[in-house]
Image (cartoon, rainbow, N blue to C red):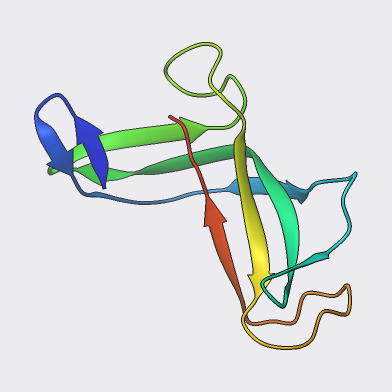
Amino acid sequence: MVDTPFGALVFTGTGPTVARSDPTNAAFPQGGLDTINTEILSLTLTGTMGGVYAELRAGMNAGVYPGLQRTRGQVQDKTGTPDGQIDFPANSIFDVFF
């Protein structure tokens, strides 16, 4: 879902994504589950939005507007004990800036 000046549109697309874990941070317990801070370094999706071809890019300074914020997120265990290791399957969330 992308908010535009014309309202929200659904974007359907695929493409490569490069992400990394925060190199200064090992897994840490949060709410009883192991969590790793992450960052999307680059993301390029191509597809359609409102029936029209579209390309969405994200990552530091990769979007439409210069100086975009970093695209940070987290990966977190769904279950398990805090042991410094992410157990898969896991949940993931990112704040993505285009």
